[in-house]
Length: 132
Image 1 (cartoon, rainbow, N blue to C red):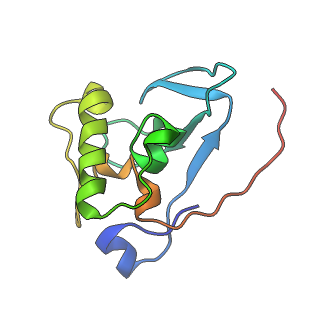
Image 2: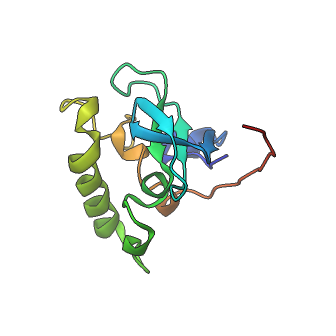
Image 3: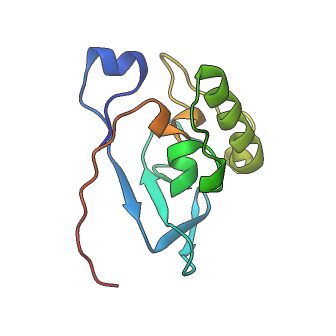
């Protein structure tokens, strides 16, 4: 569970749900596969208006920090750094959702809410034991 994002969150602090799966990886934001032994899984999230899809899946590290490898997570990040990391990840991995996909902002949701969420939200995680 995550705290609300942007202007809407200030008006309606209901938050957002995202589901993390340790053994399901995102080949692309809309194509899934079983994770290899060393992969950390992916986060499934739902945002209205993301290229017409009902859900998208993002690799865990990218979802949290807008980078591919944990070693790339900055020790400190200001707004400019976060924007640069998000744009770089978008160019490398999210164009498969369409080049006209809105970035998102104060009033409009977009691809920027799919990456680097740990920079702007508090998150609460609940863990449930499951079987394969």
